[in-house]
Length: 424
Picture 1 (cartoon, rainbow, N blue to C red):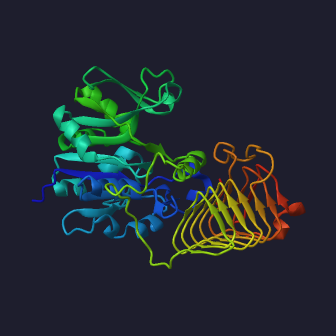
Picture 2 (cartoon, rainbow, N blue to C red; picture 1 turned 90 degrees about the vertical axis):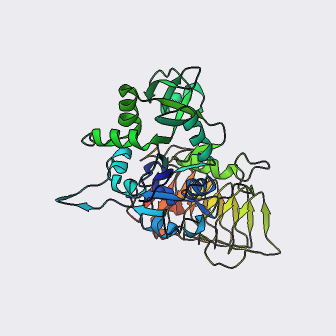
Picture 3 (spheres, helix red, strand yellow; picture 1 turned 180 degrees about the horizontal axis):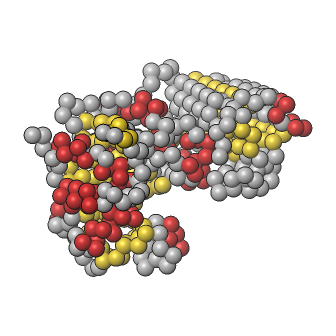
């Protein structure tokens, strides 16, 4: 029988609805980040850097691009005969097909996969956070405290604690109380959604709670184990960790990469971030181009001006075009004289000549202000914008548009133009 000390189960099936049109046709963990990466590259790289060579990736929502990106795990050295990376979508069972209905339900439906490896410990991860963590150090902490469950936590400002699952600990780091998004938090130690379980404790809890609707780790499994008397400990993490679940936090995390001394460093030799690298030509920077404090990926051609921006592979920025404080994803073309300010432009778009995006008053989005705010203009993937139009702040455009879609040649701040039928 195969025996692994610890395997990882990576939850990557979420829609990420707060990222709006960026996740209309792609799972959140497959969204581009930092020019050349995708969000899932970070937990996968953490696994291989931590010596974990068996990872189950649980997918569900719009998995095609995510599956293609992961493949057989070659970039992360996870193409193994024993272990490696395994994609785990929901599948048909006798008499019925069950979608994953909660984080713990998804893990429960893959008990057979975990039993194949007979692990001593199971590491539960989310596929949508940006951070570097040595899970081996967390496992040593788990063993040293003789714990049944270790929960990775990090201090957050007290006024933000109600957004998280919060743990209260004693002087030994043992958890004496767990609050799920409490109105009045008793602690500022927020759960990061990273857990190490002893296999026995995890298996028993999942089987016992198998009939629980929408079974979730924070709402059901952790409270159940706590009430049962299992030993829960908090592993405090003080490094960089970012939940890029909103357009604002996603934009900020990307912009943080181009700080003079970035809080999150992509260039550390001892903790590399691995990704699937396409075979593409080198970047070309013309003599008339102007670039200041930006990340420019391979295959990009820059003839215009780029300032404080993240530019992905294969982007073309034509002469006279200006991109400032923005994220431009793979394969997009910014035509001559266009001006992009504080915007997120998704993959394979065409921005017409002299078009201006991100100008005007910072008005909340009229249809979905919770998602489309932060003073950002968002252009969905495969969008075409004609020449000579002006698009306001907190505005959204998706699909192939023409000049007739812009009365008076503009889309006002806070408006949505959805020709792709993806905005909810």
